[in-house]
Amino acid sequence: MLEVARREAQKSEDDIYEEVFIDEVNQEMLKNVLKQDGEIIVVLMRQERLKKFSEVWRQANLDYYNT
Image 1: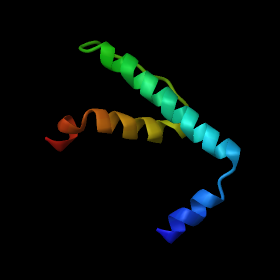
Image 2: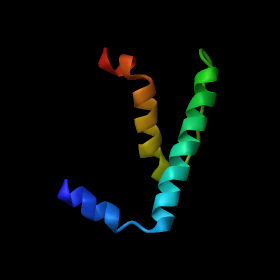
Image 3: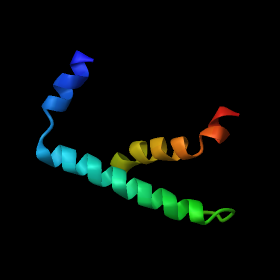
């Protein structure tokens, strides 16, 4: 826990803005992808964003990953 607190304290305003912005964009992307239920969707994104988006996608489809 102490390590997480240290790491968070070292973040700049730009780092925090980028994290919040990316999270909001990921949520919007997820909403739009889920609207296309049954369709094949191709999503192109930067590699830096892929990990965060994959976490959002997994949380939205947790029942699929748990079975």
